[in-house]
Image (cartoon, rainbow, N blue to C red; front, side, top):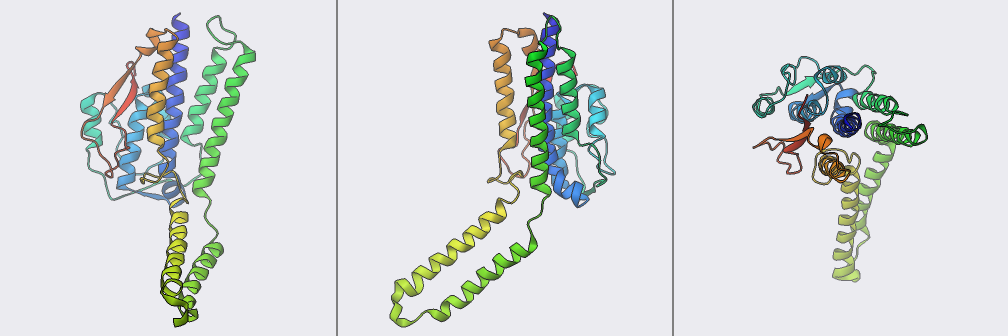
Length: 282
């Protein structure tokens, strides 16, 4: 049934769009929404996420969603094209960016919440339809949407909540005090192992714990030790296509295609996706 196929297509594309938008939100949340500016490198990554988002939504939907990414004095990310093509994507990715961009810090609806609203409307639209779900099942999907909304809020809170400065100062002070006073307690009678090797290992351990704590303060970045959200999105794209294949809905599966961006390598990060799922009819 064509209505059931369209419902599956919309469910897949909006779910993937939410995750892409969530990754975009983690890039701009701290530096942009809190500090008011982002670097050109971050702007390039945000443009990449917006290109992925454009491939999953219609042109009118994208224009509304793009307004929720308030970057000042930037050209239109898709240059107003009606349909994305490989040449258009390459031109956008390779364009020159400025060193810094200002971002509006005024409170507003964030893009992931707007996509969740579209997903909720899609669920209610097909409830109790001949091709859709019964209301006793749709409530479970609405609960999943609520969990996704809570996930967004928790991610935002983890990024925007600063570490208490008195705690940081106390840790640094105690570490410095230990390193400065330990040599004063060492005597020749303690021997080489107890007087040199053991204190050195303890200092390295404490410095390592301090460095690890600093790195794990924000696990949503693009460093090698951060969470691979982009890889998880790519894996979910493959699983969605497999689900459509297993349910025998070739019409829904054929509504998607993969776009490849050759030569793209941002920040020398091999995890940056060079292939993403798009709608054939945008």
